Length: 171
Image (tube, rainbow, N blue to C red; front, side, top):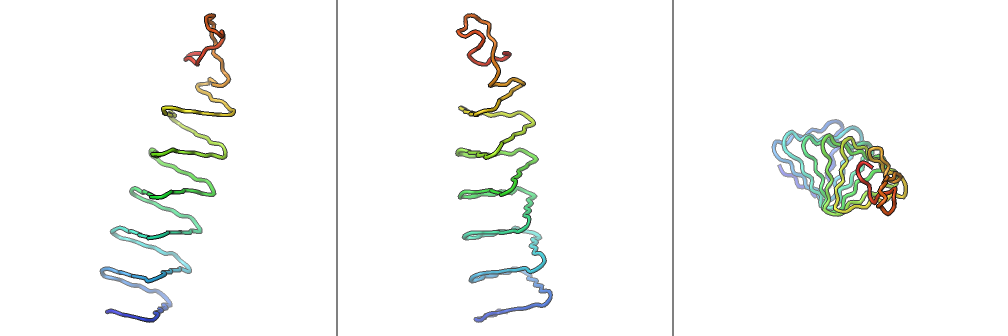
């Protein structure tokens, strides 16, 4: 059956509307498509197969409540342009496995407040060159404070007895 209408078509159903399509369903809309659910939920269930969305321009979503996304396989987000992740509240990232951050360019971390790192294992930093600058504070390794300790040297041949030129193990 084919219907060609050159006017508007309005359908009002007072109770339920059910449609069953045996094979394919194709809908082409010339301009806007608006779906408003006044009360209740909307569910999309795909028994077998995949879902693909192709949007030629922008995609904007506003959710007044919470958003939960669960992937039982791998979840991947890719942006050809810039990507921004922001919140006006707390951002929590967690993983039961390894977290890897990779970049082919520079990486900047700007913190307006305090930064605390609690590491239960070994903390390793490897770099061909490094600069660490603090205007105050202390670095403590194995109960040795590195800005307030002195090295004892009783060698009279040294130009400044009582100090060494660099920290040495066991001093």
